[in-house]
Length: 261
Image (cartoon, rainbow, N blue to C red; front, top):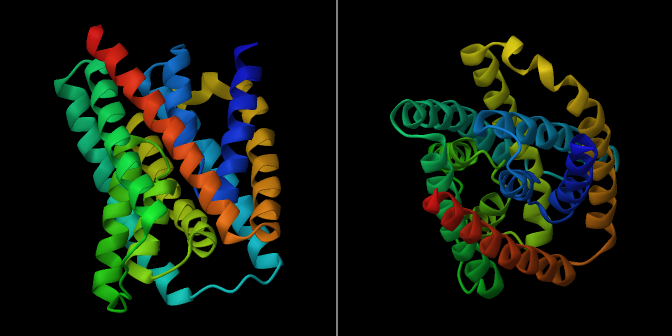
């Protein structure tokens, strides 16, 4: 029953993730934290697998439909995000050795709420932006995105969208496509780090859950990529903002709950 609930959560999350560039982890992690049936490391793993699967499907669909990419931006951002993903996991492991699980989840929830609120405000206004072209600067942006995604265990989608619109003058519809492509690399690096540090055996017991969530993530990636092509930037922006507001509320609630423990 729990695996079925997870599958529904992941289907909705990855559909929205592929549609507006959220990735899905930013929805999956706080909801699974709210359900509270899995330790933090297991939640991070399930979220990472689901988002990684969605990113493969969604990016593959975009390529198949000949959606244009600036390959240099993708390559340099991906290189930075992979390094950032390793660094973010390293920092989270250090925290895990020093603080209780509830304290870490509390920190993650409040930091994520603050970031999402900032993203929501910027994307809804978007009064200024830049056009970064220097490869080193693009890598640095990717490093930051990869670190945030890995440290918070979220995939990084909404932060990706805001950063892409800010530094590369993209609209939300364009940045959603790039965001999902970047998520592929950041989550790949995180999965490698997870298996290298904890071993595959630590997650083998999740195979029953994966049977439910992997098809949900695949379906979410397919539906979301179709919706992204179908609807215009205005609707995508409104959907993005509405989801952000709900997630800020949920993360604040989770943070307060863990603070009380």
